[in-house]
Amino acid sequence: MTKTKLETEVSKYMSYVLRHAPEAAGLTLDAEGWVSFDALERAVARKYDVSRADIIEIVENNQKKRFALVDNRIRANQGHSVEVDLALTAVQPPADLFHGTSATAWHSIEREGLKKMQRHHVHLSADVETAKIVSMRRKGEHVILRVDAARMFSEGHSFFVSDNGVWLTESVPVQYLSPDAGTP
Image (cartoon, rainbow, N blue to C red; front, side, top):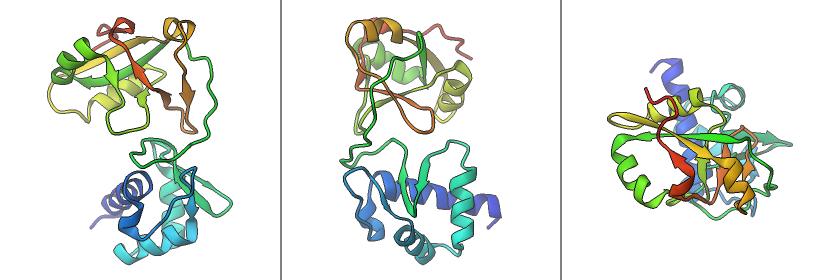
């Protein structure tokens, strides 16, 4: 296995256990989603031939900045399906935020809006380019949605920004969405 492929696999495994199934690795997250880095290192080393330095490199060089490593504790920055309180503070968003999705999903979204599904929040991007990258992970044609975040905020909706710059909100009702944000 190439180093890049191994790094990707380890990163996905870490995301899985820190966001969705800590018990699968014998881990227990605290109320804010943190776990001892030593415990995570042991769990990862049982599954992959990697060192502590390799795991730290994966955390530090992860393009999506999925993880926070502080004082020998680690957590996923967002995207959890397990119950955690990320202790985020509500902030005023930029005027527009963006969401990359598939044309197939758009048919449902245009009727129901964006929903968090099994996650804690809907994930939004601060720019079209990032939303395009996200949409490329979806099958089929891609759609970039513009979210009128300024109007949502002025009408009482809360927004948060995770440590890695992903904008989060509970849901995006359809009246704040438009599919004309530079769709590829």
